[in-house]
Picture 1 (spheres, one colour):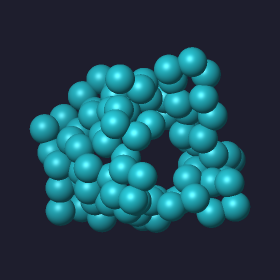
Picture 2: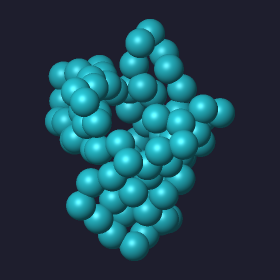
Picture 3: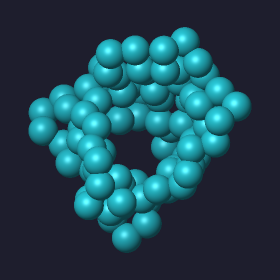
Picture 4: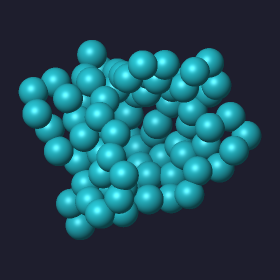
Length: 83
């Protein structure tokens, strides 16, 4: 995903190889950090001034779509496109 954006209606995020998350969701800045732990994408984020709880997510790729499923693959999921 390096050098590409993860997008979904109203959302555009960049995930750097050095562990930073930057972008926006519906006009509000999104920032955070991430790392791989036991094969899971573990991140902490902020949406504007609101902290989003840390979570480790299962990531699955199908073509240019990535599905992130929270709670190590047992929770809700969101699909984002690589652009």
